[in-house]
Image 1 (cartoon, rainbow, N blue to C red):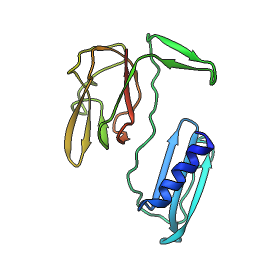
Image 2 (cartoon, rainbow, N blue to C red):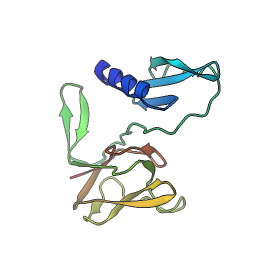
Image 3 (cartoon, rainbow, N blue to C red):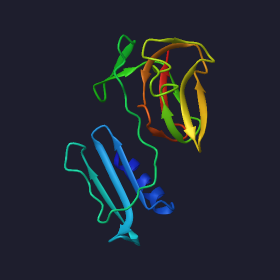
Length: 170
C-alpha cells in the first residue's frame, strides 16, 4: 500500500463514526483507533507495521467494529499467468468478480459441505461461487459469466465490502 492510500484511509476514518479500524494485507498492517484510555477521544492514533512484527495492541480493551478485510490470494494452480515486472509477482489472468454487498463470505453451502468452486473449475453464468451473509440474509453470488476459476481472492468467513474482489474467471 502506498502512502497516498494510507493518507486516504486515515482521512476517511477521521470522517467516519468508526472508533477502531484494523487492516491487514500481505505484509502490511494498519490499526487506527479514536479510543484513548478506555474512553472516546478526539485524536486518532495510527500504527503501521509488518505482520511479522509484534502485534499492535490497543491502549484499552474495546470491541472492534467489523470492517472490510483486504483480499487474500490463493495460488492459482494450473492457471494461465503473467509476471508483473514492476513487482515481480505472478498475476492471474481473467475478469475479477467483486462483491455487490457488505457481509461475510461463505465458500460452501454448509460447514460440512465442499466449496462451491475451486481453482480450475469451469463455471456457467448462473453458477453460485459463494454466499455473502448480510444482516442474516444469505445472498448467493453468481459467476455472471462462463469460464474457468483462475483465482480465489478471499478466504472462508472473511468480511468483504462492496467492490471487494472475490474470484477471477478467465
